[in-house]
Amino acid sequence: MKEKKARFRQPSADEQQILVELQVQLVPPEPVARFDQGMVEHHYLKSAQVVGEHLRYVATYQGQWLALATWHAAALHLKARDGWIGWTEEQRRRRLPLVVNNARLLVWPGRPCANLVSRFMKLMLARLSADWERQWKHPVALAETFVDPHSPPRPPLRQKSRLVEVTAMKRRVLFKGRAKIALFYRVTALF
Image (tube, rainbow, N blue to C red; front, side):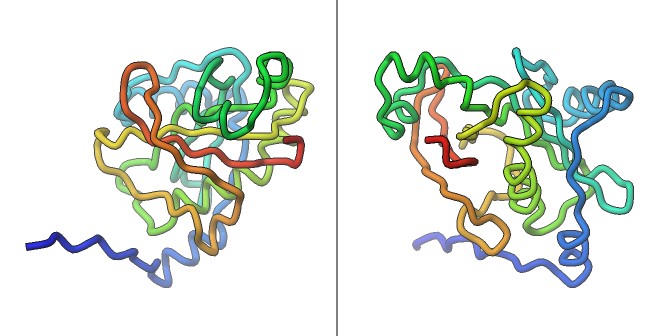
């Protein structure tokens, strides 16, 4: 018998209120230790390590942490991304700093909410380039994220919903020897 595809679950009225009032902010220096501890304890990779230029975000509702995310410098070479952009080796070398990677995303345990990840991603992507430019003195044009289809289950990220409306491209890639799903989001019109 053919397996039924999981249906998308609409948020309840309470969850919708959370999505409407969700706040996304950069993590200031004081709670970085709490952020890193949460990643180490609850993220399936058990690491809060960041590489080079980076930003940490937290999604809150009424002061409670609901989700965490870390962005850092992009992978040096990624065939799917480089082919999609269509840049030459010289262009890649010069413009790679305009690409960032969503290294970690964690929904805080015990705080599930339909569409939380989509809403969090939308709010981060809306401010990512400006935040990056303030911190690192250059904008961001493209954000990439990798999803390991063999990792522990987590809420799905809906690419085309009323919560996330960004230009995205999805490809299967081999990254660090493992099959992953790569999502690329156009953040600004620099590409």
